[in-house]
Image 1 (cartoon, rainbow, N blue to C red):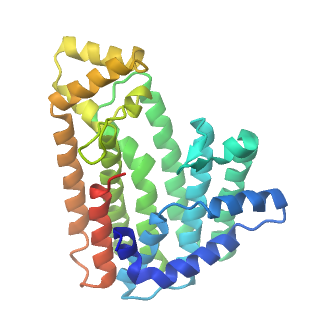
Image 2: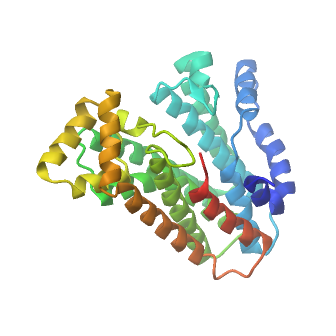
Length: 325
């Protein structure tokens, strides 16, 4: 059995019902919008975010979920989808999960409006049902994601990112939404404040590990084969590169910064940068940090009794750092 199917096992019924509810939550009176949202729903990814919501809710409540849980999962997925649609416009990307992006098929103007529509649908789903506690969790996540993206753009211009700033960027950009899923899962089933915060922290740690794993893919591994160097081409400062910069002497440092800033489209130079990062131990360092985030996340599950939900969350944490893509 595929690992994702194994993780889904204890929430299989909830995920099936969620898919119907999520599809219904997107409907509109505008035919064009329905055509586009139908296209989105039929090209869904692994749906990790709703899975986090349901698994945490069931672990915290001892096995039950309520309507709030379904609404929370739908809101997260609506807002996540909105950010992806907008991201593709910002990045001028014409593919998403191997399919054409919304902006590639319907142009930027429509894509931005669809993203806005999905965002408003998510907010109204919470407001119409009085889920203000859930709405607060999600709104904080949206604010942080925008800040994280802008912080990364600001820092990329100067390439002066310290490890602390890097963690702040990935915490906001990537980890904050997974943190919101887990906090929301606990909050939806009326978990205590302390429990909501513990689960939020759990999600944040998984998100940090997830992003470092993504950074490592850029350098290629035995499973993936060739390094891609895409992050270097896009002047993204990732953990292996930051570590290598910190280990470099002045001459190496100026060569490295010059390579990333001015020669990032030169394949030979990008490969030299990748080789340099590997030589300086950048990959081993990033792996050790990723594993420490993973361990910290797993420790937060220790206070819960054994259950199929806890088992799936443990599998999920391990999957995040063992995945091949």
